[in-house]
Amino acid sequence: QVQLVESGGGLVQAGGSLRLSCAASGRTFSSYAMGWFRQVPGKEREFVAGISWSAGSTLYADSVKGRFTISRDNAKNTVYLQMNSLKPEDTAVYYCNAALTLHSVQSMLVFGYWGQGTQVTISS
Image 1 (cartoon, helix red, strand yellow):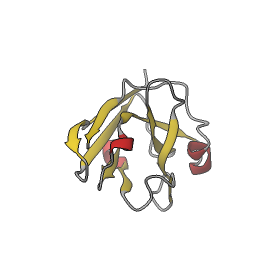
Image 2: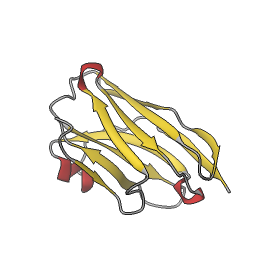
Image 3: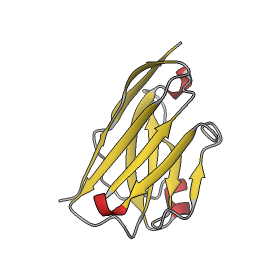
Image 4: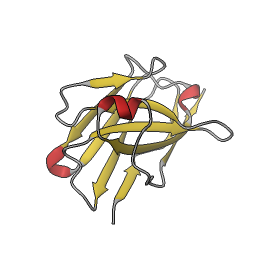
């Protein structure tokens, strides 16, 4: 059974930092691209950042470019999202998922299972 467990969210002030983690189990994700996504109530889930299976390539949404960094540790089946210079508009539930390619991650053509997500709240 595939599981994606996100953690690391919380409440921080604008300008602060958080590091999210996503632990995958049930299959080996080292051969897949991974990504982070976020959703606020009443809006569609959106792509935030993606990383290729080898970590050689990354992609970011324009809204987070230069502030967020995605990384992965294939030995631990874990992907991370370092979030700096946080803004109130970053407030959302953050999810991770996987896809065959990095561009599939960016297009949100991801596997059908989602974790419970982790809440990130940024106060102004």
